[in-house]
Length: 363
Image (cartoon, rainbow, N blue to C red; front, side):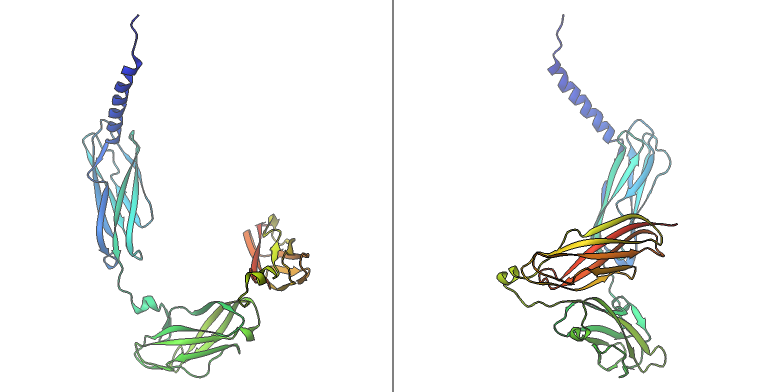
């Protein structure tokens, strides 16, 4: 009986398999699989390119789908079947609007062929359009343009007033004078420089916020009103936002080790499914793991539907207490997530957040 040398068959099998694989891969032969648009201008609008291919296989092939890696790339392709020896295309359009800088995108071409998918690439660099006054100052208030109709001071400390300037622009053809009759809370001082803003000139609204007089912690929202000598739209109303945090003087490692430390047993509670109108409560256990007395300065929920109340506001070292959080689901439905911020004299974490969740079903 003649013996078969299996090792002599393996190379033949590998060569045959490799040949068959190459045949599969080359069923659609693209003229190129990467196109570089080079440098394009945003102001010129979308650019297009057409990848062409030839069916080099022995079977009829149909492109079933072309999926782009992002919505800014719009594909089109040969919809009919491509017979052996026939040609087709995959068209790509890239819109550079609001997309400055380099880009690299892909298109996945799905077919009914043995190889199934092909990946094409486009790349380039977008030169942004020159910025306009409307870009820099999008909000128009009479003849004045501003970046935002709200002045956000960000995080501020409660130990001293904070001052921040916000740029404005006179988009009109006439000088605009700011009047002295500004409306603002006592802890907010508003100044405009210059008082008379010439046409097509920039100026500043200067906000000085006295956090000590405000005497509060957390996110704050206030309203101020400025008046100009314009015949129309002379009243300019703005919001002022600030997140006030407690100031702690610099501390040595030894001093920090002796400070109070607020620790919660859990930070999230999920009520699960509840009925619309249900009022539910839960308790969060917290402990002073520091070496000094802990004071809960304040608790503040993200909305009026949530009420928080600590059992105790002063805890000795090692002492624990509970914070009760009550959620009223009236008028709400679906997935809800609310949070409560706890402010304390823990210098390492003066503000901490706990969260409640619920899914509200209609009755």
